[in-house]
Length: 185
Ligand SMILES: C[S@@+](CC[C@H](N)C(=O)[O-])C[C@H]1O[C@@H](n2cnc3c(N)ncnc32)[C@H](O)[C@@H]1O
Image (cartoon, rainbow, N blue to C red; front, top):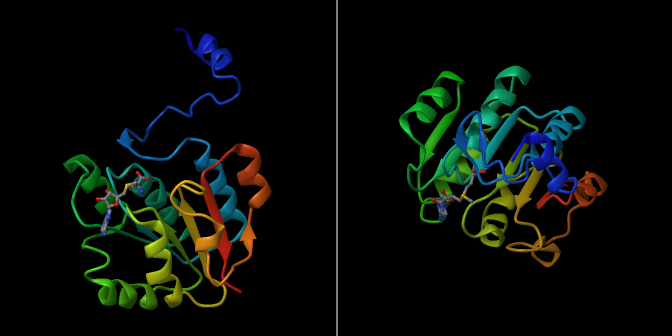
C-alpha cells in the first residue's frame, strides 16, 4: 500500500502502528510523542525517570529530550531487552540505565528518585502500574509530575490515591492517548 493510501485507510490515526523510535522498538504510539513534547514545553523538568525500559525506543526518545533540554534521564528494567546498538546510543546520549527488579529493590529505587534534581517526571510503564504508583509516588515532592501508561486498561482514576490534578487532560483525551499526566501539588 502506498503511504497516501495508508494515510486514508488509517482514518486519521496514521502512524499508530509504527512501533519504534529511531529504529529502537517501543510500546508507545507515535501520537504519544507530541504529547510528551508538549508536556516538556509546558512543564519544564530537570529529571525524567522511566520505570520499564523494554526494548528502549522510548528511552532513546527521553534521552534525546534530556540532552537537548538539559535534563537527567534514568531508566529501570529488571532485564535487558534492548540491543547493543540501543545500549550504546543510550550511553552516548547520557542516559543512566539500571537493571533492577523494582519492587525487590524498592528502597534503592526510592533513594535514586529522592536524589533526582527537581522538578522530576516519573513515567510508570512497567508490568504493574498501580503498584508502581503506590510504591514510588510517595517519594515525589511538590512540583513533580507522574505520568502513567495504559490508562483505563492497566491503571485508572481509582488507582490515583490520593487524587492528583491531571494536566494535559484535554490533549490526551482528544488524541485518544493511553498516557495520562499528573502534577503533585
Ligand atoms: C511495557 S514494557 C516498557 C515499555 C517501554 N517503556 C517503551 O515505551 O517501549 C514493560 C517493561 O517493564 C519491565 N518490568 C516489568 N515488571 C518489572 C519489575 N517488577 N521490575 C523491573 N522491571 C519490570 C519488563 O521487563 C518490560 O521490559
